[in-house]
Length: 415
Image (cartoon, rainbow, N blue to C red; front, side, top):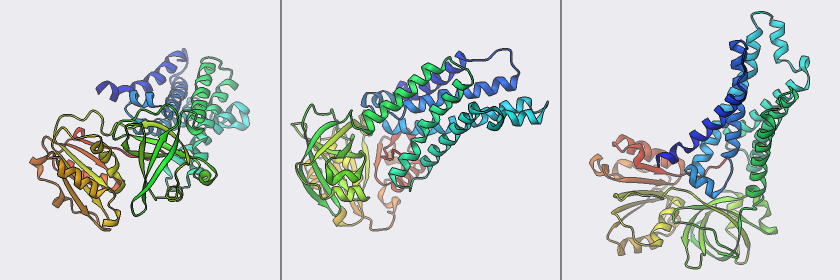
């Protein structure tokens, strides 16, 4: 566990330090040395950021999960932009005491031509890509186009170095950057890594929620309860969806058939509500470590709405091995997907305690739902649902003395 938690920081440090060590300048002033070091540090951070955007199951398993990779991907890309922005400023500061004109010429593309133009264009595309990261409400296709600017910015940055006459280690870095970008585009975005499935059945389980069974047409993907997959519905009817969507697997059948529950939250998921048996799909994954490696301690599960899916998959797979309290929150009875099934499971398993509550449109009263501080001393807490609900429960659990390593949660925001 410790090694997995350190895997991404070690990867980032290795990429950054190795480039600085390889290209460390000698015999220069302190400011100019720092300016060059910042440039190479930014290159290393961007290279690590490109690697962390890959959606590969084996890579996600070794690096602690896809969500963790994306969090570090965003942080590393942002840090790289700040570092690279400081790079030309520090170089200009080196000559500022002697000549302000020379300092300006160091920064100005009009005086040094294409090498500096490529550098500033690289920063511009990086800025566009990062802006898309923090603007969450723009349409996905626009976000995707802007975020693609990160890759363009990386390549322009390498062109900037090549135009300055730096040949090593540019060629190996350029090769790795092209490989990572091509890997992501072909295997992930175009679906080469996904496997063919077909829709077997569609069942309405609540208002605006359907459970869809998917049957493999080739070697099935390996999935454990609590994980999610990326699914793309194919055919002329579903072409407007345009990308893979994450869906938690709600059950795993004996013949490797899987079920996913789809809630109508946007244009594409509303469209999927009308899917019919026989529609071809592509399934990429599985991902997620949310319910993996659970310690042999009492469990406290909190599910909000569609967040019941990972817990349902685990309960459908067999009886639990430790005392488990499941708090299931939903707005109204018509929104309570699988409530009757959960009640049947809880009735037949003495280790399961189910608390189901309709909250309406108001935030639930956490004090009335959670036990006192002593009741949580030996519990592991698992949260899945809307971000606001998860944040509220994390805060309240923390105030009750629950340590961060006892609280587990997973998001599906991959922008």
